[in-house]
Image (tube, rainbow, N blue to C red):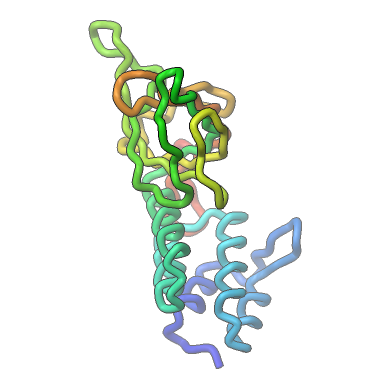
Length: 206
């Protein structure tokens, strides 16, 4: 039996009934079927896949956060909170390669799926004196493994001020700084605009 106040049911109802993932054919009816049989974790995963395929507002990711918390899936709680912030503020996906420790980079790996690191980034802005004007963005390492010094990994960035990053486009190179020396280089993969309403991206969306 599907509880009417279930956050998963509320999240499913944010989608139009005919929404589906083109590559897999998964749709809202599949989610409802899993909920009907109390397959909560499977329904949660399907909703995340639908949210990836069809951009959703912060409310959607808050509902998934609540559902994960009720199921004691604490790593998922952190992930859905991050997705909420991306939908609210906008974010960046990039491929980040860390500098080796012996070349002046960090000596320890960056843990995956934490989002606690807030390095500075050279994204091309300059001070009036012509010096690089660094911007702050939280860092989330995708995948299950730490990002080791000298290694590369897909990452997600959550800028403190997303408007300052609007000039970037896929393929641009930006650099990471934890103090002043170069700590890593990242190639932009995707610019993710804020989702201002259900199924609608911010005005800067292409």
